[in-house]
Image (cartoon, rainbow, N blue to C red):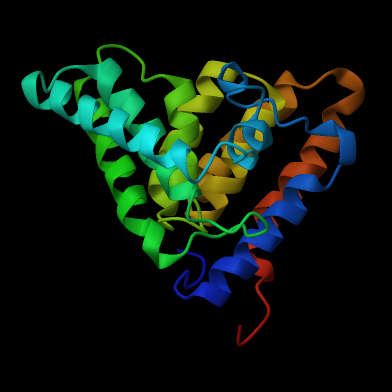
Length: 221
């Protein structure tokens, strides 16, 4: 690892630097990753308008049904995918709307989402769904379970499916957080190759900033 990722303050600092790095380049990166799940990362994970109250009860009842389906058929990959989504959904209902991190109370749901993802990946035939990988990415993100290696694996699946500059820039970011410089470099080359001619330089600069972001943690934070 490039630095110690433990502690709430470190998670917040890293999340801030990653977000700032991703935003560099303005309109260049449109965050279309996982777009089949509602139009991109911010659309998928930023909207919690249906959380709380009866919404929780609906999700909880659905989770119970899904768990029974998986217990009856452990190879039911469709049910496992839905569990990843729904456990993540339950976790977001415990998250402050203005926060980029999850409270400790939400970690149990996040762990269950991660477990469902791992079971799904173990059982799926062919390539794992990039839509479900988008949820897994957020489950393993710095402000969630904080498992950069697993987040990188999810980002790799998304990049392979989306095959566009923004998806590979995202992979650059998570590979850098995981300390995998080789993958970060390879993803940089791929992002540049896929970029329009007039944007190649900007994409490369964006990637270099993403690779530097984990190293910009203020001393003593």
